[in-house]
Image 1 (cartoon, rainbow, N blue to C red):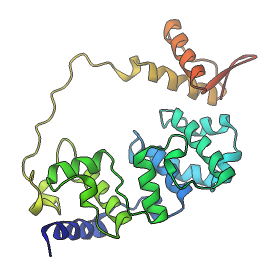
Image 2 (cartoon, rainbow, N blue to C red; image 1 turned 120 degrees about the vertical axis):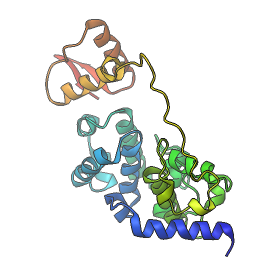
Image 3 (cartoon, rainbow, N blue to C red; image 1 turned 180 degrees about the vertical axis):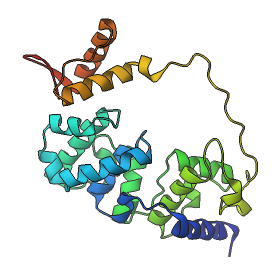
Length: 258
C-alpha cells in the first residue's frame, strides 16, 4: 500500500468510528443537503442543528420552500445571521422547483464552488473534492499535495466528509490535537502546533457593528415589533443597507420583511 493510500485508509477508518451524528449526514436529498450547507456558512454546527431540523419540518422539500414568501423565509432564518443567505437559498429553491437541478450547481443563486462540490459529491455521486477552510488547512499541514490530490478514488463523498470532520474536530486552526489525529504518521506538521494568535487590541465589539443593528431590525420585524432602540444614525445606515439588499421594504406603517 502506498503512503497516500495508507493515509486515506487511516482517515476514512477514523471517520467511520468517530464521526458526529449530524442530521444532514443521514440523507442524500440534494435539497436537504443544500439547506445544511447554506446554514453552515459562518454559523456553528451546534446552532445549526435545531434550526435545520425545524426548517425541514416546515419545508420538507424544495417545492414547498419555493412556494413560501420571502417574508416567511426571512422570519424563519432569524438568529442564523447573514440573512442574504436565506434569500439566496429561497431563490435557488425556486429555480430548482421550476427547472430541476442543473448540471452545474454553481448556476444556482448563492452556490459557490465548495457548496456545489459538496452537494454534487454527497447527493449525485460526483467524484470531486469539496474544499472548505477545514479541508484546505488539513491538506496544507499534511504536505501531501493540494486537497484535490488527496481525494480517495471512488469515495469522494466519504472522503470529503472525513476531511471536513478532521479539520473541524482534530486538526483545528488554533489547537490541533496531533496526538489524536489518524493522519499524524504521514503529516509534515505533526507536533508543530501553531502558537495562539495574539489578541487584537481595540477590536470592534459585535454590538457596535452594523451587522448587529441589521440583525436586530430583522428580528424585530419578524416578531411584529417596532424598530429597535438604536442610535438614529446607526439605524438609518442599517435600514438603507437592508432595503438595498432586498431584506426589508418600506410599508404603510414603517417597514416589513422582504
